[in-house]
Image (cartoon, rainbow, N blue to C red; front, side):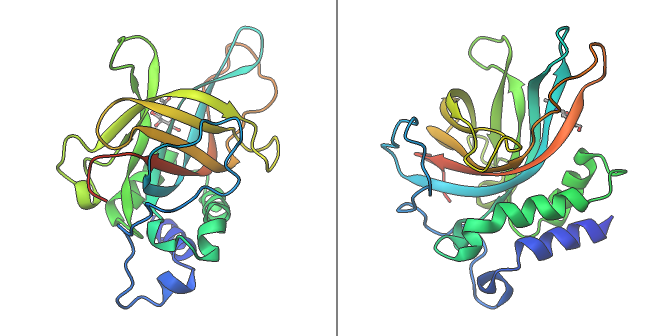
Length: 233
Ligand SMILES: *[C@@H]1O[C@H](CO)[C@@H](O)[C@H](O)[C@H]1NC(C)=O
């Protein structure tokens, strides 16, 4: 069990900056002037400043509809702080390291278990979790949530979350095997007013399915950017 966490932390810590260890901040670096590389022209340009940048590993869940195609029904992921990598080449490629190591985690480990192990070892620097909740405004349907209330600098701050709704999405520039980049606006919570999912790796379901087959979980990695939050980094 610990081998997986070790592999992941090695992959995520493999940048010279992080590997040098001593005195280097692993989390909570100022990224207020950071820019998203390849920011899609169809997204509304951010009017706010980024406060958090994370790399996520997790799963996208899909159910099979009566027409034999998959529909996304949610996701669960662990979020690692990459703010201190900003400006290094490791920042640009961290999602590749993340998906590579995540994919070789043995399939006998349910995603939830691997994430739970990572969560408990808290390496390299867990910011929080991403998962879906019932829409807090309408009580209908589900929306994505980013929850930093139980770890990092905001542990214990019950406002350190955001539940958001998708504004728009675009196909990943890296190819159809990767899930869309998305732009989301906050519904509730103080963690952010705007969220972007970028640099996606994998996470797409098969093109077709047999109606009645069970839900599937597909591994993915991505970056999440949180803009305009009022909680500390
Ligand atoms: C997604 O699937 C995982 C198991 O792979 C499960 O733990 C999680 O609760 C599921 N979440 C949703 C929203 O379907």
